[in-house]
Length: 199
Image 1 (cartoon, helix red, strand yellow):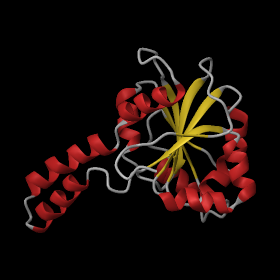
Image 2 (cartoon, rainbow, N blue to C red; image 1 turned 180 degrees about the vertical axis):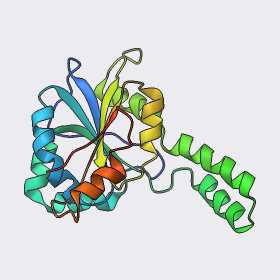
Image 3 (tube, helix red, strand yellow; image 1 turned 60 degrees about the vertical axis):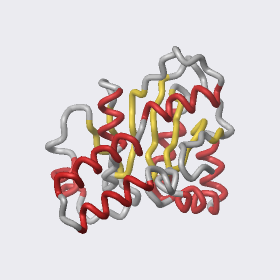
């Protein structure tokens, strides 16, 4: 796996140009995939599912669960992992400005990192190269799934690039303290393109 660029890794499931596209964001736990797997299994009939893991540990933990890994492998056609040293110079610079309390410069660097690190266009280009799809072919993402506590910058970038994107939040465990509190906190005030899936 690349330490700087987003490498595309293919799974058993095959990409189809006749299907719509959705992205699955995984923060760290195989439980995130375990909870959503029945829905992914259903969706993969009509959607190409692309997975983005936050780090190598997340994919390694998934591989340790052979049954779950096999099921996911048959649902998601490809995946990538956040490169550990991507934009490393900008990230170091941001820490320096933060310690020096150069708030304005820190904010500018932060916005630049958000744009360059979470680059949806680069991933699309890499997917097309890996699948030998013509560059002018459009790949529109219509949905994004992620665990409800995962505050991922991918969301804003995907929303900016795909206007009709629908976002689906879900828990990584069935043991929730209060579904009513969860509803009020994460769903009640969300716009119409955001949804919360619960048991």
